[in-house]
Amino acid sequence: MRKMTYAESGVDIHLENRSIEAMKAKLTCKRKGFGAPLTEIGHYAGLLDMGSFALAMTTDGVGSKVLIANAISKWDTVGIDCIAMNVNDLYAIGAEPIAFVDYLAVEKVDPERAAQIAIGLARGAEISNMSIVGGETASLPEIIRGFDLAGTAIGIVDKDKVVTGEKIREEDVLVGVPSSGLHSNGYTLARKIIAESKYTYFDQMPGANNSIGEELLTPTRIYPEIIKLARKCDVHGLAHITGSGLLKLHRITSLGFEITDPLEPQPIFRFLQEQGNVDDAEMYRTFNMGMGFVAVVAEDEAKEACRIMGPGSKVIGSIVKEGLKAGHLSL
Image (cartoon, rainbow, N blue to C red):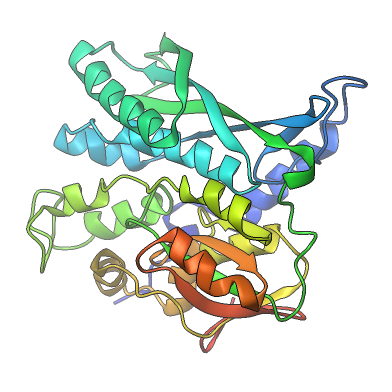
């Protein structure tokens, strides 16, 4: 059985990074004075100078997870994913979400589907303590097949409380926080694995009570606990583990990471790995593998950080001089 990879399924992470760098090279215009940017393009959220505080902005979408929602006609959770992918990036710099606008592009207007999507958006906003203040719906039959859902979130943070990763030092510890499943990344590979397996989205997930499609639609966890963590502990770095899996850790520091006691991935990850004959390194480079967030703190803050972040959170490793190792894997 051939080994399946994210790149072979159509998503080349390294090519995506090159594309991002090519765009960044052209985006050089910067406002001066009030509202000037405080961060370079490429961190989890952009920051604008508002005097004593900063306004944080993020934008993201649900991705190809919406194709599974279409396949089983279940759209009431993808709105949570849309909110989560944005506000979790705000949390990753210590910002508190305050407002959101959504963008729904459709091939054909479907009021019932739109109402279900709104259920998820409302639930995500409730979890995040955030207002949805507007949005846009576009009918684009020559561009869109089905629908696409994205949005933009804004948050606020005191300028002296922004978490950039610059305080990270060797021997700091990594606190891993459980994900709820695949979240909203790696679905191009996940869908291809199911398509080439003996299973369909309607088949029961082995060892579970729901179908494979329902398991794959488990909504992305939202992490409002991060705001309390940032207030109670001296947080040196925060990482939202999304596309490219644990490689996302490189976004917050040039130092290295050694993961010696990783969180246990949910059964869906092992199921996909077995069905697609995906090797361990590829799994950790593509999926969150059961860990949706990482907080970097000093060792003496680790116990309190785990308590605040809730059940399943634990110290998974430490900051080292260079590299990224997860057990026996060098990623």
